[in-house]
Structures are given as structure tokens and as C-alpha cells.
Image (cartoon, rainbow, N blue to C red; front, side):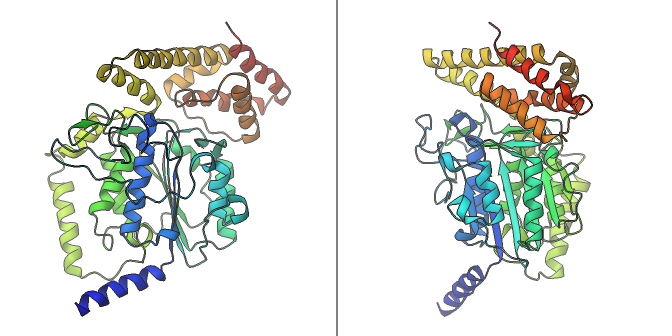
Length: 447
């Protein structure tokens, strides 16, 4: 009993003195985007279980999924399916969310990272030059931005300014950033070249979609369909790896190698400072730096990995990896997939109308961009890379679209490459910017 008391006291003391911090963000809302809040609540559970104090994990999520009327398990969220008769792991239980609803904005994400309590109005990073900081974001994206449920977008240039501010103000010793979003590589390309001591991983390169996983028909928990994708492929892969990892041995590079191998639908990439990827993941995904591990444990750990990955890798297809990729859905098609399956499972008038509305929306968006910027359509269809450099022009294009057309959707975000291409052309002919903006208005006013 006394030994147990000492062990608990040691854990409590370690948590009290932890200099590890985390910021996690789910940047979407609505039940069709269930997976993002499932991902971030799972991340919260991992970090908390590994000893990061709750008041040093700052979580932003709209929080409209658990108690949605569409949820067959009211008040619960799951990030992995289970067979009938096997209860799922409720990642929402005890998942603390610090910023909800209208407070989940790009402005607040920046304020939290910069430690600006006056702007954020809630908990913010209070880290220092000795701290390890972990930042995880899950949502939709487009070239040079990731989306937020309210309050605009988190643009790559503003994110870069924030990271430079954190570095200049000695808010961390080392920082790790994981971003789950379409074209998430564009948040780092030409951005993390500065020596900021930040290591980043993106779910996709700068020109491709990320993917949802555990989608219908593999969306069942205890035999009951959730009716939405339970997670994102990249996110589920790093989270499930973290769940089973010996964090004192497994390194950032090990985790990257595993996740890259298991994410076959997009190109998982590394960015920034790669000099500390040999550090154990405990240094960022737990409440304390890694403790010393015997050489024998390391030999056993890497021996098992070698046998699995090198000797058996060419002859065996891991069924779990196959399953996650087999039922993956392109994030751009998530809403279409969601309403199609709603009609299959519940063929109500309301669901048919919602499916028809989604199809009509996609056709409308296709026509708007094909009308406004036909010269850019071929490159977009081929999957060419577009990296914004004139962010002020880019922001004007987006504002014009949202003012004169409609809010950008999961689907229309894929066409923002046209805005990037147009803005890059306008750098040569800036006098034509007004005409380009008028093209958007004209295309959106068509009957």
C-alpha cells in the first residue's frame, strides 16, 4: 500500500512540474464531420493519460457532435469501430474542451499559441524556453490555409508569423506540429525553412486531399452504425500508434515511418527541423521527457519492428491497415458520402432532399469556377500544385466569393487553387485585380 502511495505521489509530482504543453484543434462542425472531433478527443485522451496536466492541454472544438440528434449514442463519441457485442471506447468521456461554438476561430487559435489571454478570453499557452509544445489540428484545408467552423481561416502566412512570434518570445524549446487537412503540406512548404526548432508532419502534400476512415460500411460501434466517418486516416494512424507505443523508446521518426506506411491514400510528409526526430515521442506526447530504458528493451522493441516491417513486410498485408484504407473516403467527397449513406440507411424525404441539395451544390460550384476561371481548370483537374505567395490577394478572392456567392464548403475548398493561380498571375498584372474579382461576382449571379 505504501509503495502504491509513493508511486501515485511520484506521478502527481511529475504532473505538477510538467513542462509539456499541447494545443489541439478540431476546425469543423456538423455531424457529417464527426471524425474531426473524434480525432481531437482521442488526442486529448492520449495526452492526458500520458501525464500532460489537463490545464496544460488546450482544446478547441465546436462540440456539436456528441449531443447531435443524429448521434445513435447520445453524449458519446468513438474514433474506432467495434463488432456487435463489443462496446466502443468513448473518447468524449472526460474530454475537456476549452473553446466551443463561436469561440473556435482562427483568431483564438493564434491567441492561444501566442499566450494572449486578453484576446482569447480563456486558457492560453504559458510555456517558456524550456517547454516542449505539441500542436495538433484536424479539419479541412486548401492551398495555404486550414478551415475553422467560425471566424475565417487560419492562413499559412499568419500561422508562420505566430510560430516566429513564439520562437522570438521563447515560448518553447522544441515544438511538434501535426496537421490533418487536405493540401496540409502547403501550410509548411516554403514556411518552415527558418530555424525555428519546429518539426512538422502533414497528412497530405500541398496538392492532394486527406482522407476520412472507418466510414460506412465500417462505421459500426457495437454493431450500430454511427452514420459518419469515425476518424481521419492520418490521424487515426498516429493516434492508434500512440495508444500502443512505448513512448520512452519509440521516436518521432519511428512514429512518422509507421504512419507514412499505413496512410496509403495520401503522402504523409515531414517538414521543418528534422534534427530532433530521434527524440522519443514521450518528449511531446506525454507529460515528461522520456525516462531511461534498458538496452535489452530497446533491442526487443526494434527487433519486433524489424521482423514485422522488413522480413514480413513484403509477404503480409496487415488487415487493420488494409481495412482503414479500404473504407477511406476523400475528404472532398465526405458530405456526398454522408448523405448517400443516410438515404441508404434511412430513405426519408428529408434525407433524399439533403442528398439532392448536396449534388446540386457541387454542380453549382463546378459551374461557378469553370465560368469564372476556365484557364485554371485543367491544372486543377490534373492535381497541379498551387502555393499562394500573395496572401492579401488570396484573402480578397475568398472574401469576394463568400460575400457574393456563398460560404465555402468542404467541396468548394478544392477550387481555391483557381484563386491562387489567378493571384499569382495578377502579380504581373496587378491592375487587373478588380476585373478578376468581378469575374467571381458575375459567375455567382448566373441564373
